[in-house]
Each structure stands twice: as structure tokens, then as C-alpha cells.
Image (cartoon, rainbow, N blue to C red):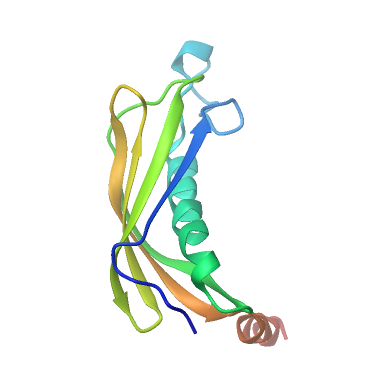
Length: 130
């Protein structure tokens, strides 16, 4: 199904734009990377890190997130997401996740994903809709 080893690392960089920043604070100077977007980008980085290592027809889904948002990343800042696979238990993968700007760490924690057969997963979801 996969040849994924503890210690596998990945990285993703992005610019904080209005698409991923908070919008409810009213002032542009108060707009920062939103917590849901930070977590989503941590998840994306984990998935993208292991996806090339999976057999065709397999992917991963998130199953648990334990993340702290430590500091604000303002509009225009560059954020680097770093992940490291710290545990593999059959289909379950556990990652250490971190997000940082050039100036400081803005988020950290752990994230778990499960390897799935996409066709079987889709069939189960279709059954649930019936």
C-alpha cells in the first residue's frame, strides 16, 4: 500500500493574502492568517508530503488535529509550513506540524491522517447518501 518512513519531511510556503486572512476585524492592518486556513495548510502539507509515496488509487484523510495558533502572520508575510512524519501504525500516520514567518513561529502541533483506498472510500460515502 505504501512505503512511508518515520522522519519523512515536507515543506510548503505561501504568502498571506486576503484569500487566507481574517476578514472580520474590519481594518486591513488587523488582517492576519486565519486559524482555519493555517490548519488547512498544515493538513495540505502533510498530504502532499506522503501522496507521492502512496500506491496509485490511495490517498489520505485527516482524522485528528491538535494545533496551537501562537502568533499572528499579517497580510503580506511569508509563511513556511514544515511537517515531519513522527509515527506510522499500519494505515495511520502522525505528523509534527509547524508554521513560521521570517520573524517567528506562528503555529505548531500534531496532525493525524489515515491512508485510504479512494474507490472504496467513495463507495462507502455513496452508500451513506442512499
